[in-house]
Amino acid sequence: MSIEQNFVKDLSNLDAIVGYAADMQLHGSFSQRRPDLGKMFTCPHCRARRRVSAPRCCNPAFATTKRAWDAEQGFHQLECGERSNPDTIGRALLRKMKHKKHGQSRLFKLREQILRFQSDPELVKAAAKEMHVKVPDLSRLNPFVEKYLQWKQNRQARAERRRSSASRKINRGA
Image (cartoon, rainbow, N blue to C red; front, side, top):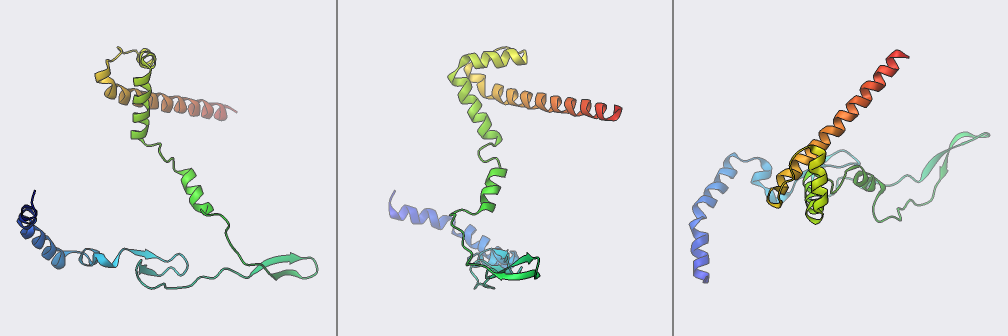
């Protein structure tokens, strides 16, 4: 493809692009009219809303004293050393990452189960026997895996409901 053909292709869309830009300038939101300024966010220290590219609104400083209690003086302020974090990743971020089950999405589970079933046909036979259905051939493996995971999830939920119901009966009777 030559350079001229590229320009012809780009120029054919020019009317649509110019129309879109004009419509955004007339009817778009502020962020649509000015995407170069960036998104708004709230400063965690002073709670002021500003743009990411705007000048900083505050310069937070860590406390230089800490509260202490003594039998003689009661509660009083003590000087403390410079505060620094030796870790490269903060604890809050690590907590968030542990809380979220990264990589454990539905699609991830489907892919993993399909790979397991493809590598070992005995697992497919065992799953089909557990569900009381016919063993699928390799071309029907994907829908079978989806049904199998859904079936398993339903069984786990049902077992959990049974356990909680039995627990409530025991607690009511006591």
